[in-house]
Image (cartoon, one colour):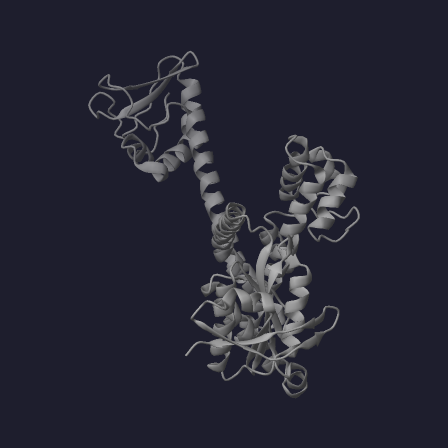
Length: 435
């Protein structure tokens, strides 16, 4: 005899009542309908409606003939979509529903656990590196197809410490090595060129990273974040801001690259290659102040000085070459631009009570530019002129004074012959704004 399938589960399945209905129907089928399907090879049928009247109920039935599955109803219509046809399909539907439910539960539990657990240093490192360190140096070289000695040149140029064969490298290190190693292999560049590219990026971004980390941890310290919580706070902030910082870094680099290319192009067009105005601005009595101020006060003083100087130089169309704590070095393409920057620096610092007086020296002449820095006699002369200046005074060399002589915006006054160490006698002038 055929066994009835209990009515509730059958009705839910026949209506296509979703995962819950199918799961309930599957459970009833697993306990009884499977036997019915096996025994029903002679055409026996089960009444899904549970009324006992297969001729008038209109409910679907599941039948199996000679081991072949088929669906029918007492009215001869097809089984509604979504209703499993056999006990095997019913069981699979039940298992699939249970697996999905368990997966969702695990995901929720993991999210709740992660929200309660603090990130550790390893997780923060993996976030910053863009992957988990899992390769040795030799494995990275093998994956990139680059000899170890060549790879080591690139890594040292970028400022990376030698870690031996520790698993300190990620997949990103393989990609970077492929790019650097691809330069000489393209036939367009030499290996020395690739090393210079690596060194320029390494030195610049090393200072950038130190600067940004200092700013971040100063903010943590001000907010009262303890050392044990810093990894967690760093992880949370990193997840939110790293993508934006990466995009911003590329944007700034492209703008600076375009500006540098424009300067070189202009110099070539004007046949004035190598001529630059170079200036140094020095804080007066910084050594004495450093003994009087606390570390926090000294750091704040230097920060204000460097920030004001950087803004002033950029606004005047110059370039901030380097900062040395109590001193900055800047350059400009024209004498007038350098003179204006020097005057604006004095005015800016006078408005800032936290910063002491300045001494500024500016010289004009040929310079050697290399790796973002400038060298030569003109640079040395500008530095020496700074030491000759009085507090709140700008001293310029004869070449710059000559170039500014016809400019009505500036006033020049000779300050007498001076002996400059390593350069001999010169006749510098004091620069002021014209009244």
